[in-house]
Image (cartoon, rainbow, N blue to C red):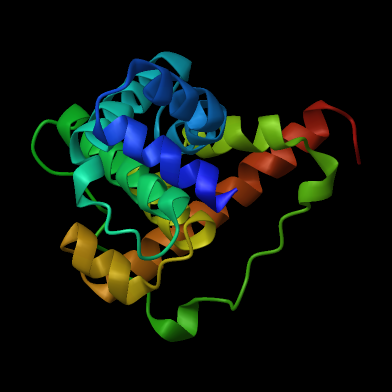
Length: 185
């Protein structure tokens, strides 16, 4: 597989249409899922996906070959989605700056996820306020630390933690509403 990936990367670096099409077909569905987590709907997600692949093809010469090519591309997709959120909000994302004290935060908020589908959960995540959604995705899905999130978004670590906490609270309420609507409990 590594040999084929190397050939694909080389083909893209040489602007070969077949190589670019193949790369797109291999990763578009997976990356669309990432885009959907950061956007409000499929149309916005497709726009972010398109912009991401333009950046991937434009910056492919910058891929050093060290590390995973897929991880390198995912980082571009996530950064493009974050940039799209910032642009959509015109100037700067607004974060709820009312930080929560450490003693106010429970270790974890129990959400009964097995009772709803991944598609339903994605819809609920898409409906979160942008600041909550952004920190939730970066922490829970992308696995970034609060320190990394704070640095990338130019916010305090406390703000990152409180955005995550509030996102989880809101998701719990919405999941419970959805479960009741579906008469699952």
